[in-house]
Image (cartoon, rainbow, N blue to C red; front, top):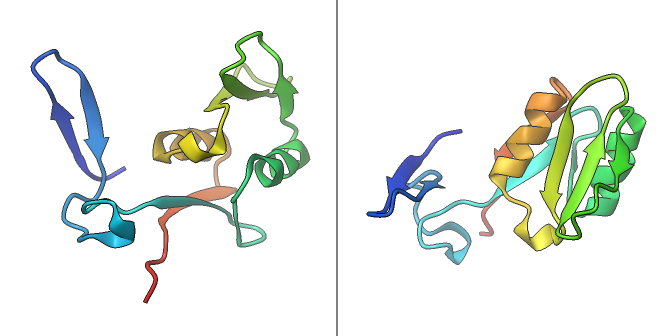
Length: 115
């Protein structure tokens, strides 16, 4: 992950990715990221497509009782992938979590900018 960590006076921080990337996507200088499934080249654009890919890798939906989370786990590990309930809030931190737990299967890239 590249970017700048910004702290406020209360100690709360957030990552500003690619702070010098210009004004891509109208995000005030922030570039949006996309999660790419490397074997197929597919950009994950919904939880339906992500779940299909994860199921093929042995992940299962986990219903842990928190209605605000969409979660997956593997019986063969202690790993748990926790995502926000709404795909619109699915961000780069969640993407990198998926990449780390599925090496050589996913990659995070900058979203192409429209011309």
